[in-house]
Image (cartoon, rainbow, N blue to C red; front, top):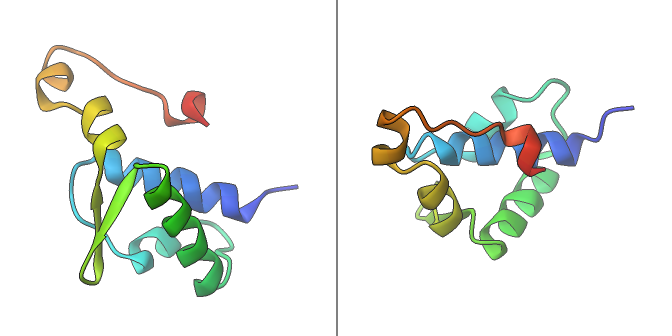
Length: 87
């Protein structure tokens, strides 16, 4: 059994770690059998409360945790993180 909300959270964190703005539609497109838009937004708001992402206008941007874990300097030195290990 797959938990669709967990898949949305994983995808949101994955997009945040890329350090680029993204939309709820970007999250839905990256999830097999995506849940309703309401569920996607509920999960994104939870990630915002947990400081993974922040909403600005119609987009979502990396927040403190995503920025710390995806620091450009660390990535250039071979640092990598498996998002599945975080969740």
